[in-house]
Length: 608
Ligand SMILES: O=[N+]([O-])c1ccc(O[C@@H]2O[C@@H](CO)[C@H](O)[C@H](S[C@@H]3O[C@H](CO)[C@@H](O)[C@H](O)[C@H]3O)[C@@H]2O)cc1
Image (cartoon, rainbow, N blue to C red; front, side, top):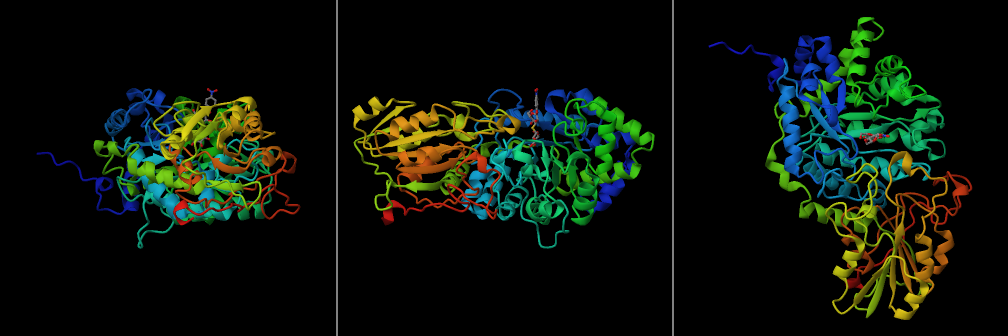
């Protein structure tokens, strides 16, 4: 019989670096460039995957195999892609990536956890690590081994449309929450090679610290704009969480669309190669953001050859193209053959990519298995998210005088009113990056709205009346014991979320005025950041910041009705007026409505 030639790279008993070295020397330039190419699932035909030795595929925001696709549908899709990639000459497995930034949020029926700003309010890194563990299981349930998370941005201006993806304005809170990496990837073992990528096994995923660096510090919070802080400020505020992420073995780092002092991060050789790779010693791979290299020119993609040259020579390893794979591959091939990009640069990029794939066991287990499909939306994960919701709520006002607190609310109360645009809207309470890229409104996935939670919590004798936007006359005439008003921002993501006024869109303010002018009320704000509320606070009896709690609205009712106490603390300064921005804890002239770290507490009813 013909013995299959022994190839070191296929031997799991060989050290990772030996396998990388052996495979690298067998690879053609085309195979190497293929590994550096990440394309969107919609352009990933078998022919393309095979002909171009594609190394990675992704789902962009909202990109799913079919509407409400099941975990099995996802696994089927990934399985087919991988079978094709394994059929290539060297059989290098592709790595499939997705934005699982608050649960496996593109996927119908996934547990949707609170967005990062709410997790920052919990001040509970252990809880966030457990969320990482649960999220990894729900990502693997769909056959995916790689998540573009966590976002470790330090949002310094709430006018930024992505501020909800940031744990806090304080880098120390963001640093603490990098524990999620250990949840996603698994705990690094004692004898682990420092700063190397580490993924424990088939219940874990490769993570991605993003977006490097200073994405949360852009001028006036304008998305993808310029971060003007000096180098010491960049190191003090925006860099620390990358040190922590690398210490935890983060497998990949994604570059930011933004610039630092006028130089785009996707072309920043000093920060990407000299600092991240050499000074910090990062050994995983650096991935671009979506068409991030195209945006190196104005207009976008005006000179793609320039984009490829500058980004790869800056130290970029994998390009999230995601559609024009021919343009990328042809330009890179030409630039290498012309020696504009040295082969050593290509070898560094491919070495890093292979290192991650070997270290995470992708060569041993390239094909997704169906054994984890039941992890998706699992009750235990929803209960964990419900706990996170409880701990994320920040109580900003409780009673028009501290002697007469309104919360916790009595469960037995005759007739109560639940009002507001966000009271019965799962899409709004999940926010952006949920099912759709920008998120959406209404019954978008499996979960519990705040109204449903209230109904499930009050005494059976209590009559619950729901009206989205009642007039004062209706409220007065009904003689309600109290009202719960849930209003806030519509769902959004990225630039679509940039705001200069940070107002709550109508009819939110009107609903507050009509209801709170007529009956005792607690207002629950659903938002990705502090919003304008100062004018309305006097009319409220109580005020709760709930951020973007996700699918488990029961967590809100648990605390409103005193089954649990309020413990959350503001992860960001709550301004009085947008004219004060940017304004962060530690600034001179710090004059907030509610300061960073503020949060009233209540005791659980059983101890009252
Ligand atoms: O058709 N158009 O007009 C259009 C416009 C803008 C688009 O922009 C694109 O749309 C989204 C959905 O396709 C993509 O996800 C990204 S966002 C980017 O993508 C990464 C991967 O999803 C994340 O990890 C990063 O954190 C995030 O910054 C991009 O901005 C797409 C299409």
